[in-house]
Length: 180
Image: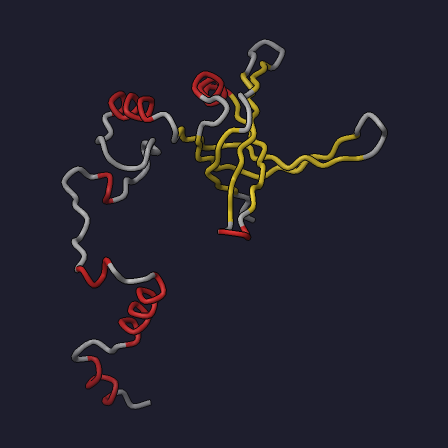
């Protein structure tokens, strides 16, 4: 079973950080982000509660504040609770595995310099994982023709579908020779 949630949004208020009790106190940071989806009149904002633990919680507490944009990836968790009036309530939250700070360009540059990441890409990287081609400083994006730059998304999809349907040279003759 796959349990994963990803979203990019802005913090609605400053994060709240507490520490667990016991021999080894652990930081627990909670915050909520506003995630927009849809366009125009159909645009909606959904609030997602996020919880982080340990060093990640300390970093979120230190660097995040109301209005900052973040990327969050983690597991959904649904908890129920009893309200003061005796009724039941449900809390849906994400236990974050990854939190990337997207608003603070200065912080992103500091992290990139500290970890030796090239000054390009999309914020923090998952270190120790295979890196995509765009993170390589020697890689350059393929050049597009003027026609491709002016193409709508629908036209692009139609062109790709036509390319996939075409039989490459040399294969047409092979199809005729197959005896079934």
